[in-house]
Length: 170
Image (tube, rainbow, N blue to C red):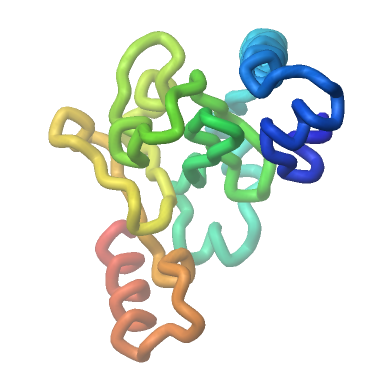
């Protein structure tokens, strides 16, 4: 818990608890796996109707087909794709992968625990520019709205582009 709460380095924890860094690493990995096994058994994915009924006004107005907003989350030496509903409820957590795993590869994974298995052809995903979909997932739409591009101020051109994309998807 200290590692997560204070971002303490493994060698510092080893000194604090008088154990080796490799022991600290094994403990962190074991607890991470345990917590993931407990959390991953909980079904988080809401129905399309639940998502639509709880869309925030701005999302409903500009991006009414968004089912999930995704981002890559990294902790210790793991990475996971995390999805939230447009109103901010965690709805998807991928299996854990090494922290060198790219946004694109996490998004495009297939199989029983993948996000792609949960999405329907009419669903839209919202993300920042780091994510792209492979051709095999062309039935799903990926939206990169201007406000997620991590720039301090939007140019007039980007604002107009965002509005034109909205008109095309409606």
